[in-house]
Length: 297
Image (cartoon, rainbow, N blue to C red):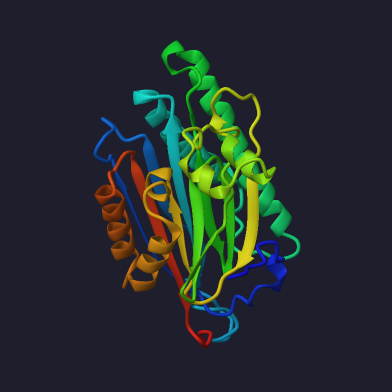
């Protein structure tokens, strides 16, 4: 399935009816590692208006209206033991702190707010990077710790995805699965340059050597941000490499096609990764987006 992930948010469907989101997340330590360095977050972000008392005629203003979207985040820490767990925790915590510090929240995208939403998302992750680096420098035992981060947020019927590292975001639409993110790894760079095949990359022992991470050894981090219009019934999956390493895209597609709910999809996907060996921590977050045919009166 071909999707134009660079489509302008202004071309998305009108925000007439509210978007309903069924979201669930699950994280498991796996069978090999002693601790879980993955973390995830599902948050509901919105605004509402309620008319408490007014002299205006009925119908001039709504009695109550609410507009909300869901933010999904998966972070996979690196650095070993407590350092990796701390890095992923700190990454998500700092992103939330910065979001709450904003004087206004963007809940819809148009030609004026798309660039602003992109910049805000990038800045939150850049500042989280600074916080992780600073914490690593403060404690020698945590020096060099870092984290991936993959975040998705629906702004009305537009999905915004921000990404650093090799955790992944997938879109399931009408029975077909599309990967939305590109791994920020040395092996992926070799694939992009034509020096390594995708088949060889999947088996390479260096496939998880990151060239871009929140924190870590690099002073700088770059953040991929994209927007795409949602279709009714779309499902979005965020996952750490504990899933994508052990469960191939065809199996993921089959699970998302068959699952009756986001929770069921998460539980089946985690079970599949554990049954395949559970060599790493495995974290999955799934969200399904629907809306009514006709807008509310």
